[in-house]
Image (cartoon, rainbow, N blue to C red):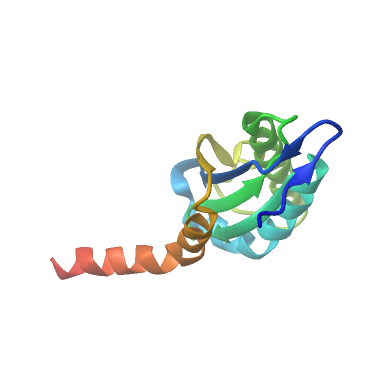
Length: 145
């Protein structure tokens, strides 16, 4: 049986598969932030009463399965997470890293991908978990040609 969450007058289970990238897919910067971004994303999601169910940070993009209460729009939650994490990145840069061509507050590209997760949540979570291996396999196939 599925576990539903509840608000005052609502029982809900709203999960979304979300993917987004840093501007210009800056891999060299993204690798430095990789370890810290997960913590930041979880904390920021909690501020909006959302929960990251599954997530994976790749070398040039982020995949996550996120549960968002129906009282919040996906747009608002993702805007909040991307905006506040970009500010955290800018603060880290100001007091630590000095990387050329790094733009702090506009670290993330405006666009993101989102799809609803229905009864196939297990499939989506496995996809997110195994995305890195699939990308490596695809890159290897391109090299063989």
